Amino acid sequence: MSQGYAIELYFDPALENQVLKAWNVLARRQISTQLIEIESRPHITLFSSPFIEPAKLENVIKAFASKQEPLALSFSSIGSLPHDNNVLFLSPTPSVSLLQFQSQLCEAVKREGVEIGEEYRTDSWVPYCAVAQEVPKTRMAEAFCVLRDLKLPVAGYAMDIGLVEFSPVRELFSFVLGFGCIFFSGVAL
Image (cartoon, rainbow, N blue to C red; front, side, top):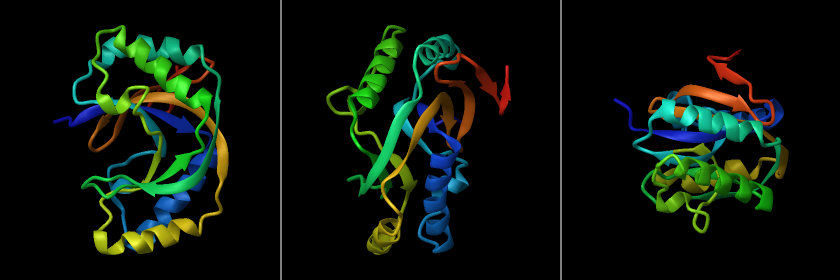
């Protein structure tokens, strides 16, 4: 049974590999393997909800993606979220283009009658790329030290946007920004 759905922003291969490097170092040190285990992909969550009709949003996301250009991103700091999941993340340097991108996406989704939760509203959304989940509290300091050894900032581009069902993560569809191309299971249609 699905726990929910998320609209995710994916990175170019070089940036994705930098994030995967962090995941793998934390996994080798047995600090956190959660993101690998749920078969996630490095991303920034733009919107999430327990209740979405994927078919209803496919054309909305496709049209939105076709009007966008790849977004420059630079992950320049590390942080954690103040809740029970003990999430550690890379934080992108704030940019007007990223904030507008997310805001415009939520407006498009809202026009389809989908409720936008508080954490994804323009005035409260915090963009981040998770690098560890469910880190034991006794290992948080060690995990931060590991992440501090990354050569920050790491920069690249957001290249596509997709809808996933979780958990485990299953990509339902994705679209390359600016091209309107659809991918199902890695095959362009």
